[in-house]
Length: 311
Picture 1 (cartoon, one colour):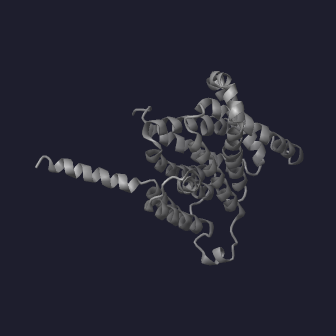
Picture 2 (picture 1 turned 45 degrees about the horizontal axis):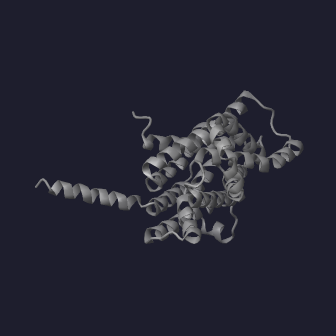
Picture 3 (picture 1 turned 45 degrees about the vertical axis):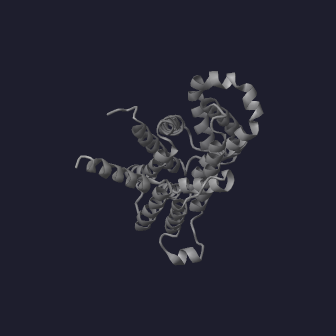
């Protein structure tokens, strides 16, 4: 097996991000969300600093010049998405949270059209519609009565806000790609994020008195700080650089798959019929949005053309 293959790197990234949902759920009753997010990025910063320090120091004038962009990247990506995710799993299952995360590529396509004036194709619209139907099925648990009465779990509503935050972050990154050095800007957004999170985490620590630190909790912190943050991001970015975002995006669909496997295996969650149906519809919509079926059809046509060449 070639561990440097971009496809293997994409699977590794999805694996570690899937685990983040389950770890977050595991901490839900003992560690408040802002504190957990602060610890996560504190661990990530300490481990990533040696690798990005040179790039950080060499571009100080650039960071000062682009501080507004970096602030919004940090607020939406580092602070917003992760804290909202940890809030969400206080009220809903990690499986539900991961499934609601699935339509993110479709939402990014929509926001890219609205704010970056990117072209929207028919497949984008169809994919977005399917994704909306799938998520609606999940949050309503397949019940029209639940949907009409709007008696939806607030954890799922928080998760919808979380993926909106991440999608905004992704659009900001797309707009500024090539302008900001990747490693250095990632480190700067961590620093800004920790500054934003610090007062909220301090308040939680004083008022809510989080759990006593144990070996198990330390292992959890190391997982979300190193593997779900640094390793996953590095694997993802390397694979996207090799394959392009279009070919990489469908691998995000592995996140709810891995999250479900981990949740069922380690914390005893169960997969419901509504989750299966809604998840399948959502992932189908994302696959349409990212053009997987078009690429597959082109590949088959190409193979048939080549085969006829030997007739």
